[in-house]
Image 1 (cartoon, rainbow, N blue to C red):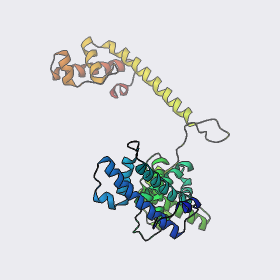
Image 2 (image 1 turned 120 degrees about the vertical axis):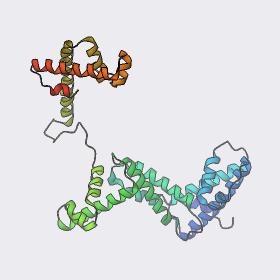
Image 3 (image 1 turned 135 degrees about the vertical axis):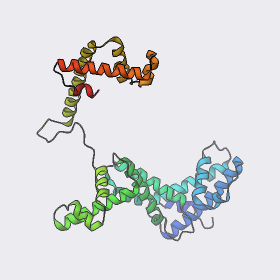
Length: 325
């Protein structure tokens, strides 16, 4: 096959890095097979392939990917083209898998499992293969490096922090961390944020926000130190119990004071403030329920509140307990 490589040569090639000539031959054969498969699928499915899809490597790859597995192909020519296309693409990826693994290792400090990083790196490599144009005067590895890093940055931004970071912010954070490490190594101590800001020209508010979202999450069951059994869960549990007790006592208090009111007054306050657990109603809505005007409901409400305050004062209770509700 002209401009291609024979099956014998394909079998001899392993996952080792290809020479420039070997890679160029493989890329030419891949592009030739890619165009032939796109044309074949277009004819078999009777779907016209656009000029953009014929000339643009990524557009053609998407056209093939969306149609290649749409049906079980019975004709041998289509099956052979699909098999050759898949084999050549995997062969190109296999020759550059070490690059993907190397770049993935550089992102291990961001808290994302290495297996996930490697998966994203391979996805970035496959995307670069889909986009690569034979007119590019560069090696596939050089071109793929940017796309692999881009895939890794997006994965880290989405998975490593509680707040998702954009790749741009992740790069800013990475540069800041590198500067801190370099200054700490030179001065034998961790530099202050002010010193880093002065050297890097980063705004204080921006650096503070990046540091805040980059903090590692703390488990609520984590203890203060190895010798202590006290954890944050104890504080939260105590606060929840205290809030529940206060809520229960407040309900009992309101129930006691409501006995000083007339039935209609109790009804107005119950509907107005949602004391049954449902949402409170407006004065107008309460007036529709009781068949009275909005102003009349306001008068009943104010009179009822005055009675509650007076009863609370007689019982030695603080009026603030009522004014908050």
